[in-house]
Length: 550
Picture 1: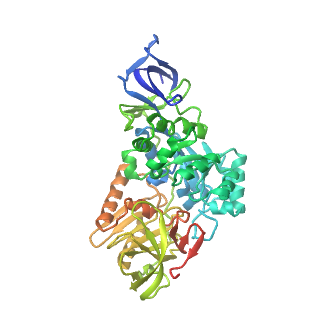
Picture 2: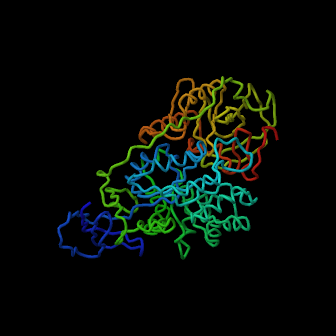
Picture 3: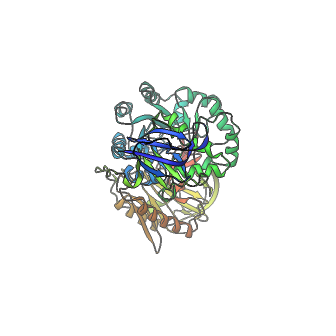
């Protein structure tokens, strides 16, 4: 690899949270010297003059899902490294929910030998809940956990989303956690609403972190009870930043991405999360520490996290710390442009959809005849994924509620049997959207104002897997040939197709700030407060399935 000397650098020291003028020498992919002041090395080396630019440790994403970017690990590595991310902990529960342990193995194999370091958390909740809230497509059993712990770079058990199962002492889930403990895996959490004794019970079984939408009181309680608090984009508010900055010790606060859409990934990755935190008042060096040294400490990656002797020379150079945009990225001492990215590991993972002759009445509201009806209506807002439930008197005509309503159909992938409910406030005026990327079970979601176009969208989806939007003058598709979940196409191509669909949705009256993100979790049965499944409307807090009729 040779030796490289970087001089005239402004070195970001996340260990003492300071910036100092100095130089550093890289040998065999690691930092050998990191020194203040003028260069004192006399041996022949390649010299790179940083001309007073900042040298920043490579960023580490301690909680994320590659599949949310709809691409393979190979495609993800190419773009995320450009943005300064050098290591991630992936939780491949999207592929796992369709293919079980084989889906996890696929993502681990696909991540091998990439310049970006991929570590894996074994999905803990496949299916998402132990309750009969939906028809799953796969499962992860305790024996699967045991086998997967032996695979390369498996260091954690993925987010324990079935917090209701923990509270109710679900036998299988507790066994999975026991296996993870025996193998000294980190145990990641997902507890949007737990507090008090229920939170304590959840932590007692071994869960060590939470990344869900948060607020000051929740942050303080979780920290006091020993958790790592992970702050993702939707939690970076001035209120939360002020609360975090009031802490004397922020060593257990991490910045993470969780989910990054292809469109966002083109513009940035964890660097954008850090920059947003800084804009909201988070101290620059402290924010960078929460995406570097604190993440490396949490994950046990002693070779990463700082520009310091002996550590891996994965870092980037930038002119501005407030808007963290890398100019040059080095991975293990090698400049980005000279890195070699392994080709995607792709096996035959078809979308596994049932074959069925579709009828327009398949998209009518389940169990509802025409006329004035009192229905359970799920209500969305235009900012995030939170939903609520209302009982409303509506007029039903030809299987659809009249007014600012859309039908939401969820069909089981392997049978195409399902349920159709009603959503209020989405704003769609015509046409339909269909997707096989629908957290977490990835059954098929179809949303629309017309049975004709809902049928048309689903027919097209069953051919390609992925996403489809259609109306009277448009048919737009995002093919996801690997399980209907991800693609080996470059992220630029995927982002362009998604952007086109999002534009059409908004032109068609959709009010949500991030409509595709909202639609992707509309069938997530652990996402507060009411969602849709192939069995009905799901009260996610009570873990109960409701019919359309109150």
